[in-house]
Length: 481
Ligand SMILES: *[C@@H]1O[C@H](CO)[C@@H](O)[C@H](O)[C@H]1NC(C)=O
Ligand SMILES: *[C@@H]1O[C@H](CO)[C@@H](O)[C@H](O)[C@H]1NC(C)=O
Ligand SMILES: *[C@@H]1O[C@H](CO)[C@@H](O)[C@H](O)[C@H]1NC(C)=O
Ligand SMILES: *[C@@H]1O[C@H](CO)[C@@H](O)[C@H](O)[C@H]1NC(C)=O
Ligand SMILES: *[C@@H]1O[C@H](CO)[C@@H](O)[C@H](O)[C@H]1NC(C)=O
Ligand SMILES: *[C@@H]1O[C@H](CO)[C@@H](O)[C@H](O)[C@H]1NC(C)=O
Image (cartoon, rainbow, N blue to C red; front, top):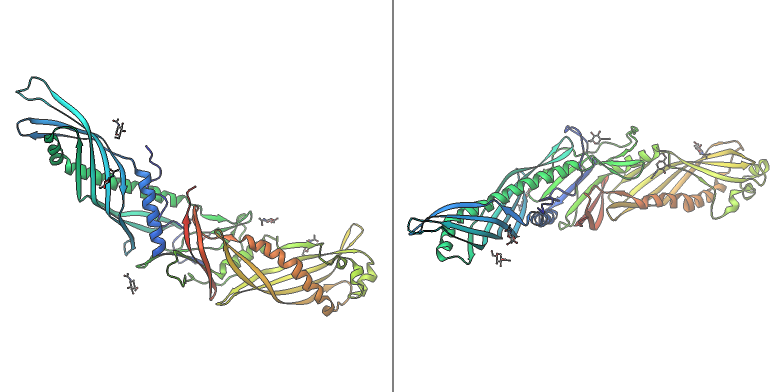
């Protein structure tokens, strides 16, 4: 049977899963699916459900009908198949007990084979015949309520109740006698109706189980790169209003190598999702703690550190270029090549306000002289770089960039005496602009994935800043893989 994954992809989709206890836990990313988003998912669900259950075989129906004159006739309906199912109207509504989905005005078309035989006292032989019949079912109503719960950090989907009611059927028999036609209607109408109702209800139940196991099997963490992943553990139960479903997830960056990372963020519970356009399907709010957890993680992974040995004005990477800025350096190491070793001295700190993202970056820049095979560190300058960030969406990733607002510097240590900082300042400015920012922006341009289920893509997204959170509002599109 072409029984793919009934009622598959669906409703709560857009979400990821995971593990842990339901206690008062912190959530740093909130996801809200609006009525528009629920409608989209409901339509997707119905389309998927229909294509996965059609053609649907129903059990044979056998019956002995007592007909005037003829007496007992044994009729068998076999190969009963629903080959078309159409939903005219449907809607989804969040409520107290869960998500209600109603499909009304549904029609379906069945084909079947019939056969009969009878014998009676006045006939010497048994009479039999067979043929084909088609059945149209109209005005079918299908309703179901889905329960959504947090079960140890994963989302548990259950079928709270489900009903299918057939209003009217019409049977058309190809061939056969008129008594047969009448007999079929009288004897089989109810049985075909309930066979259809049972089959649809049973398939919905099976579909929801599959959908639930799909949700349970979603990864607990979304990998960002070799070093980091995002914790998508659900925190608390989904919240249902009369026009949206909200989910809170942990949302923080965690190290893939499971090195515990220190906390560098203040506790902020459940950022609120603010989409100004109510027609957007989806809103995802990320607290600034998410960004700061990334900052702590990458700082900890020690890869925010690099050696600068190429700059636009290469003469400045030789002590000769510093002759007038730091004469004692040239004197001590004449005409030696140099490089700069930049490393962060603490994790960058991000603050999100209604208007922008501010980043403060603390870096140490060590001036190295390369003499013979030796690297001699001669001075260290501490930098505090203040920038402002912007964010955007590329595919399903939140990407960013940073630009310089200002920076300050101080001498941390030196083995070549005091440096006149105001003379070094223009050089630092050049290094920040031509080396540091392009490096940071190359990383930020890759961004990190939003918690969105595989197959769905964010469309027409916009980002909104609020106090301590960034909200991504957008629509989604589904693409089968
Ligand atoms: C069942 O019905 C379908 C559609 O009418 C037909 O193609 C198929 O051959 C039938 N199968 C059997 C076993 O009669
Ligand atoms: C299926 O049934 C509907 C009415 O219930 C009818 O309008 C339609 O023509 C039927 N389709 C086929 C392919 O028989
Ligand atoms: C992961 O961290 C290591 C250092 O621990 C670094 O060399 C590597 O580039 C990082 N990978 C990514 C994708 O950032
Ligand atoms: C949804 O609830 C709000 C109050 O929580 C109410 O103002 C609004 O009318 C309700 N909408 C519908 C469609 O029931
Ligand atoms: C992921 O988040 C959950 C819920 O906040 C938490 O209990 C769990 O420890 C986190 N996992 C990791 C690896 O940080
Ligand atoms: C760069 O400086 C850091 C911090 O002082 C140090 O740990 C690292 O070894 C230096 N790297 C090189 C290649 O000199």
